[in-house]
Length: 391
Image (tube, rainbow, N blue to C red; front, top):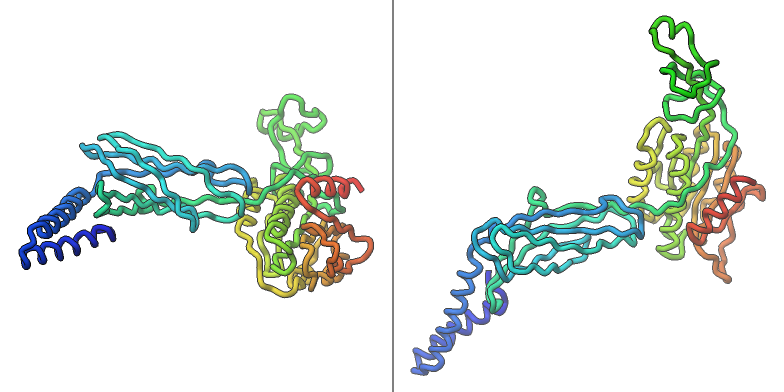
């Protein structure tokens, strides 16, 4: 198709040609014919679609907020002629990226690499890739959009940034049947299963009846079934946070607390005032990764009260630890925590963000025995959490 310059050359050439022939101005006619010929050559130049392939690569496909991620696009010329005058335009979310493509000889490839933005969480759509070929004068252009099957689109998942925290100790009840996961921490509390003897096992655990029946030395696997249950309430109200960075810090804090329990194969519940976010039972090996993937998509809500987050907790029977994460802004509805905190063995409130000197908002009234930790970054979260864990 013609560019705006091409349309101008076409209309101007036609007008000059008509005026030149109509009024006998040879110079005008020659100039007009030249413009028309230039447009014709430009259309022929760009008329044939180049035989190109495109491959996209995102490294890594999942990244923590703030870490480096790189995208690359490889263009290959499968035709028999050198292709010149090409420019590629990619999209990263709503941001257009211009990629310079040098002349490509037959069977040659060229790879363009670029950094991807990871300052904010979420699923970032990449593509589609647009390849534009123009003539030397910029009069005509041909645009090709690569589809999903041609390597034209992809996604990058930016997940919360976490710090490695200890699991907050809490009193728990033992289950007489034991855990359902073979990855639970070993101990000496409950029989879980029989397995083959491994060098170094305590011979006092040998199950002689099974050994005689199978002909293989079998030992009893004893596991610690006191699995701490971690419940995380994340306040996602926009009014609860002074800045977007404070909200991102709150999500990072929630991810760190939940990740600490999930990577130890402990059950975790994450919920907000809009409803449950994710629940894991501690039996899956990918619970920690699933938590980070889900929290990558959490967005601020327009709710006016955080009380809805505690409704399900009031109806259900819970034990273990409860961590409530909010900001330093509006605290409407957080007093509902007082109704449910007695159902848990341990309760902690984290307030993400710096406190202003003229802050009119007071911390929610949840009792003097509930620790309220101020978090201004992941480093301060780690220090405060370690202190709380040994308190």
